[in-house]
Image (cartoon, rainbow, N blue to C red):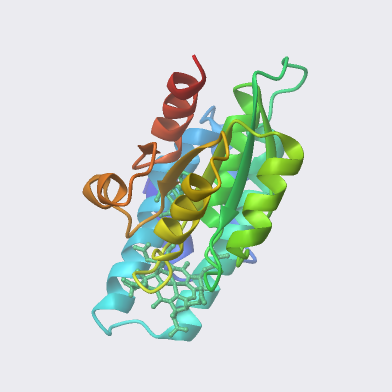
Length: 208
Ligand code: B1M
């Protein structure tokens, strides 16, 4: 069984005690942090979401898998980070109000910082007005919103409307599992990305 399959199973079984040791094994085999994430951990958490959606898994399993992802990220974060690059633009990141899913946003946060963005990550469950206020205070070029639920993604048009009403010179991009390109267009977002890698490219395009 290869390391990617092992990592996938580690997330599915929520084996958070052993995930770091397996990641270390992967790194020792010459795999990169991005490969371990994209080919092992993320397919694992996606399968968990699928099983939860079908009623095969329940909340405790979802939580354990989430904790396993968070533990992995704690280990991978320094591996993903490069230091010393000059900052090219400021971006405010947040998971919208009512939504505590932050694994994808955290990945995006590190990747953007890696590519020279000055990232101000406000965290999860963040109020629309707080996000807007920080963007103004920090003079940010971009606001990046993440939402993972159909019940919370409505916070995105709410923020976009306020930004437009008040003529705040900031671009708003959106993403997260339930968000689609057509939804992003419909609500007047300045951009949408299906994953963190695409989001970095999108941000680069928006500021050039
Ligand atoms: Co929850 N959850 N969850 N959950 N959870 C989902 C989202 C769900 C789809 C599962 C399902 O039913 N199949 C479902 C939502 C259904 C819907 O609305 N359609 C759901 C539910 C219902 C819930 C609860 C309500 C469960 C309950 O309590 N009964 C509850 C809600 C809590 C709340 O927010 N108020 C809940 C709780 C949790 C945990 C806490 C247990 C845990 C989160 C832990 C954490 O984040 N720290 C959790 C998890 C782990 C998931 C699933 C399984 C995985 C999410 C994840 O981390 N994926 C998820 C199923 C799924 O998504 N298929 C599910 C991996 C991550 C890397 O992907 O975040 O999509 P993602 O990010 C990607 C891209 O989307 C993109 O880049 C990332 C990587 O490339 N991206 C962006 C993300 N943000 C972006 C922003 C951008 C651009 C790209 O621009 C700014």
